[in-house]
Image (cartoon, rainbow, N blue to C red; front, top):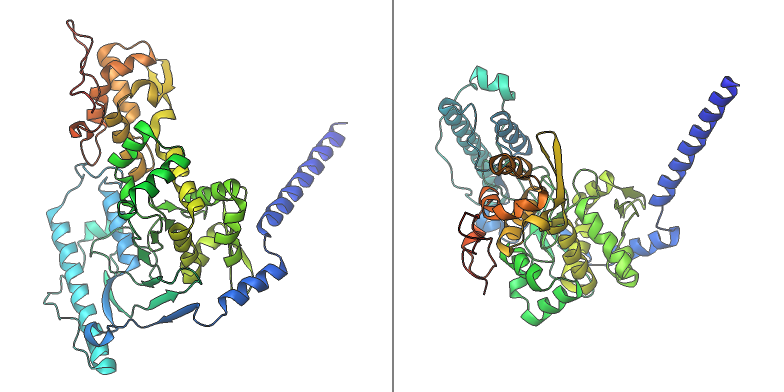
Length: 459
């Protein structure tokens, strides 16, 4: 009987796994053979995609100096080894070593000097252009042994490359042109794809005010939420912004919605929201060009040459490789109201912090509630949203709340609201929203003679 039960369980497990595999495979097969042919025919039309040298080769040279991907990765590992993370820009680094810093800077200068020399030689030979300017630097010698032991042997930090210009043309949107091998600062830590491109797009503030107001209204963003969005400078970005060179893999839109390593992320959620809100617009903006999204939020991209579908991580790589596909995202952000509304809705859903749940362990108890129950001012919500947009999380809010709970003997979660000002001060990120007179402000800490007064009243 036990053997029969065991075999039944195993059989059930095998059936479940087989079904799961079939579901996964069927989820990816979203383009019929006829649809693939239609996509290929569209992109094979003359002038749809052109790649070549930029127009200023005679002036600037075809060969130029660029940061290497390997050097960027090493610099990121170096910062991590010193206790510095992207979400902790103001942290005092551990193991600060002036000799390490001096060697790294000298090594970067030496590598850039050699790359400039190599680029100049090729430019003179191929184009008669004496560019780039040569750099004077000295060989720093081998890396300090303890630095190499902690981080690994440093690679070359610079190389001579030949950036190419990529131009994509749609029937209704022709201004799409980007250089690959983007020029990063010498110590940039997040450069990952040499064939990536970038374009900041058109900032929202340059759009007609009535257009943006209508979009925000249709996305359900009004009143205080709208003020917080504006304060965090979310309205400064472009709906048609794109970036395929860094650790976000494929990043799109006014808040740089990224697909990350799994080829899904917040970018997949934007696509999924648009497909749910307005399937017809999604067909016009994405499917007819070879892009789709699975119900799981994984991006699906056609390899236009072979007709094969790529899903998730492979789709991300395909979009980075094939500039026609990143052009599809830029076109949607530029022309599609449905895409813009989806961007705004996902930004509110993922980054506006008022509805986020908090569980605060304090002396064997758990105090629980939402951010909005204790952070009520627009300045406070802007502070937390600024952190969340730029780091993806609200850290270090839990240790901040734990410290306040112990200091003021807090017994109930809602009592944190009395100390909102102190919480906001400790959670400050890049700027102080407590100095923004257009936002409502937290009350001062209560004392024996007052119930708390705003720093200044909202306008």
